[in-house]
Image (cartoon, rainbow, N blue to C red; front, side):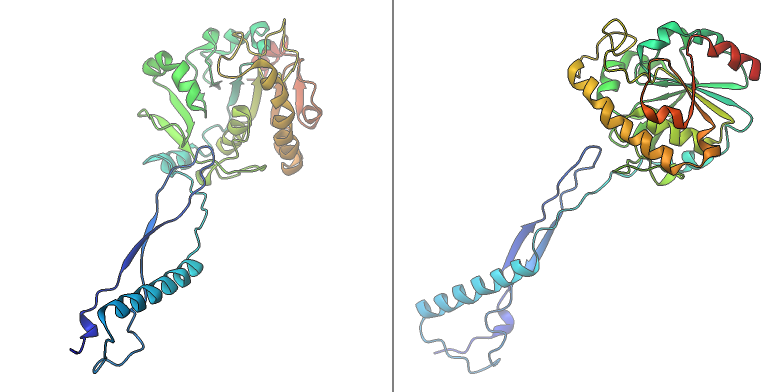
Length: 311
């Protein structure tokens, strides 16, 4: 029988894939790792190794390889990782440059509740000390606004014509792959909370309005007025949005989500200092959720004139 040079034996390679659970706004990343099995003759002498016969040698190699593979798998169990997509190139720098840009100015946030049809928002345009921010579907009376924010891909799909012609600054989550020159991406921090440094991400939660409140405080506006955050399950004349019905969400389901959205605002009221909460005014007579009492509340039908007197 011939001696075997164990240095010439090549280890077998097994390809193993880790399992990645992908939550919303999370980048899908496929990871793989090559695992080297233990050599079947590692513990045997390097010379004078005898092989009883070819068939028996195959059985020995198979048994050792199987044992090594099982041992390796136990040590390298699949790992579930949550991997948040990194913001587009330049977004972090843009977010940092946003800080304090709202000093000595007022911000008007325009959400999609039906109450904005009753507010005189057109009076708040073209005023140097007032910036405006549209949420999701822009409201024609005040368009184009200084900023536009949406964090759901469906909003881009339904408002693509507006996207193509808009030249202002857009706030998006990292789930929106398409970007324009003045787009800024924010990574999503899961769970309830409040981000004091949006360059590290924001808590988008279930409300785009809640998300931009964090950005507005980072920009350090003197005051932030929020129109159209009605969160009224009954709607106005049966409508939950100023434009009617959101085609992507059943109205019954959407109305039930207000309870979950309110939890984020309740949490913010606990986190923010009194002087920080005082910077926000919810301009909607239809929002009856308890968290509103922790901030300022105003009648959307008459507050516009008061805003104009203050700026």
